[in-house]
Image (tube, rainbow, N blue to C red):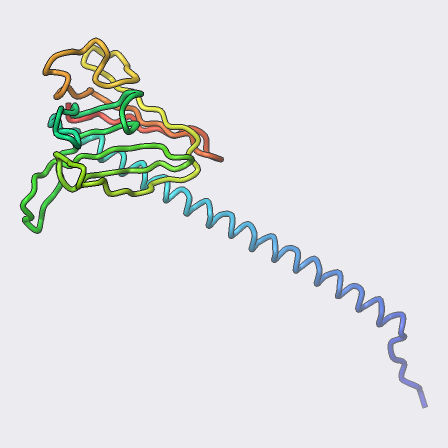
Length: 202
């Protein structure tokens, strides 16, 4: 009778080694696919965060209102748009178009401020236009990973200013004067500089 011949031990070891190599390659490829998917998901979420923050900023800037507001102590008025190194916030403005569908006893002008704290862009707003010490602002962190914030203002003569009201502006007009456009730029970690140039209602 003809004897049946099986696999030798060496052949089995070689086959097992080949299967192990293929398994390691497949696992490495799967791990890389999972890692790339996670990176893509994180970048997508980051872009959504950036887009939402810049859309909120653009909406506020587009609806600048000429209403000045009293300071916390009620001793003086703050301009409708305020940005200078001595101010409490990097940018503070009166914003119109604050809808009131519930009919609450309040106006339609909202006082909004933006500031840069550590690496976070923060939006503040007050529930009343003329705030007091008893009405602290509500705080909303819009964007993290912010390395720098730049704001410029375009006046009616086509000149850019880093402060508003302009330094050469005096008298009552400075409290209601609005720029023609505002450029709001942020330097983001890993993204570079992003900005919005918004034509205001002024």
